[in-house]
Amino acid sequence: MAQSMDPIGKIGSANPIQRVSRVGQTPRQAEKSEIEPDFMKILQQALEETNADQYEAERAADEFAAGRLSNIHDVLISAEKAAMSLRLTLEVRNKIVDAYREIMRMQL
Image 1 (cartoon, rainbow, N blue to C red):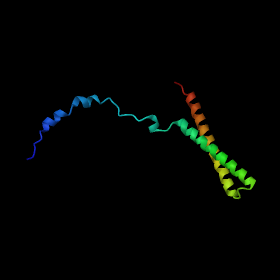
Image 2 (cartoon, helix red, strand yellow):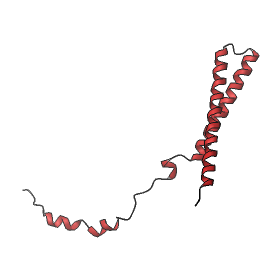
Image 3 (cartoon, rainbow, N blue to C red):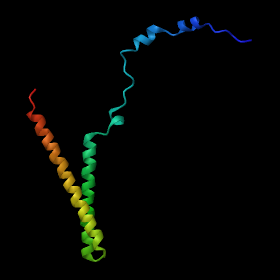
Image 4 (cartoon, rainbow, N blue to C red):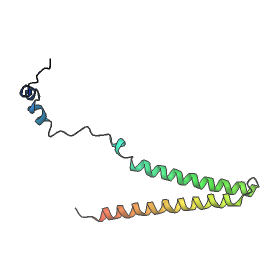
């Protein structure tokens, strides 16, 4: 036999007071590190990559000068990569300094 459901009886089991009491609460907020990486860590990683590019270009030039590397194209590519990386780093630094100066000029 089919059991009959009492729809009105089921409404009472949903506690409206409990639902209303949660209105002001926010859902679990994720940790800051889960949402976005730390700005300082991003800058540090970019500087480390720029530094690695500079070392690689210097190493390639030294090996070419010592005769251990015969392909001048690899040397030039690593040197240009290092130069571009340094230019990008300098531009980012300039933008950060400009933003800092703009913030310091703001009146509260």
